[in-house]
Image 1 (cartoon, one colour):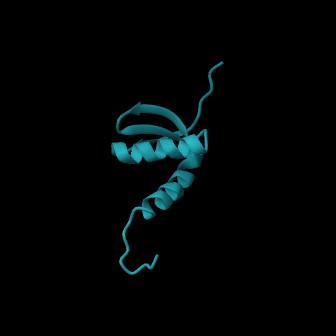
Image 2 (cartoon, rainbow, N blue to C red):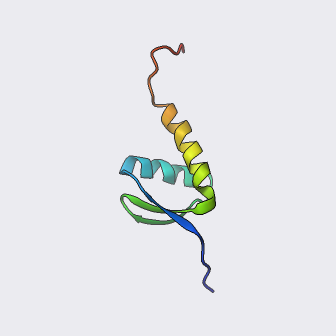
Amino acid sequence: MLRASRGVLVQCDPSIRALILQIDNERPGIVLEELDDSHLLIKQDKIDVVKDELNKLLSKNIYNPFEEE
């Protein structure tokens, strides 16, 4: 039986794609389809989750000289 799901086409570079797939491994059900090296189909209701998680992951990699460790 076929099921239709609403999705959003996301175009990104391979490094961001890898991070999105990492998020999907931790929280399954986000990525509907891996189309190619720069395109993913993501569930429409999970876009905000992906944005939040990407911001968290990317903020870990930003150097801030004013932050004390």
